[in-house]
Image (tube, rainbow, N blue to C red; front, side):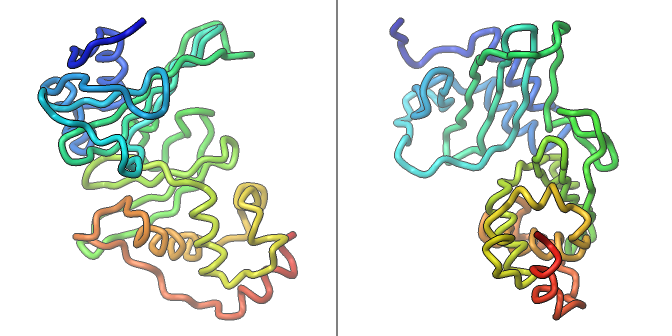
Length: 246
């Protein structure tokens, strides 16, 4: 069925977007306000369920690289799993995706989980088990926490100032970790799944340095208050690591 634009968000779209953009966290609340004032201006480039919000009259940009993910959540029922993704604002547009997929083996009781509500020292929203928390500080002495869930094999970073939990791509982060620890052995360096399978092989300081390096290329935490990197205290670690980690 063809659609005409601009249009208002449907009730379902508004409900799901409001859920993954909680108003009690500044970083999400700013995007939430845009869902109230902007219209659905066009389809995105990623197929069904992908739309772009913008002020009326805006010529939307579907050529530039996709912005990073701001918020993500899933609604599960007995037969359907609905993923909800909101991307970072790009100029005067905000992109979202609401996609329904078959949910084989999902519990009959409906449930919702989202990274938007997670706080340090709490359980993973998806699996209900505790992730590893790597605590860091910024120059302004605010808290940043890298969470690594070995069960769901996901990473995200909590920003104390904005309240946002930014998803972190595993492969890119693992590449930074290998670089920071000096690992060159392809049996290790090219297997990002080892991050979760051999979690205890990495000290918090190594993981923190890897995140700081990653953040300079793919900013999750704003550069106006940089995350501090721990000093390196194990110069031989990279050479020894590949001997024991395989």
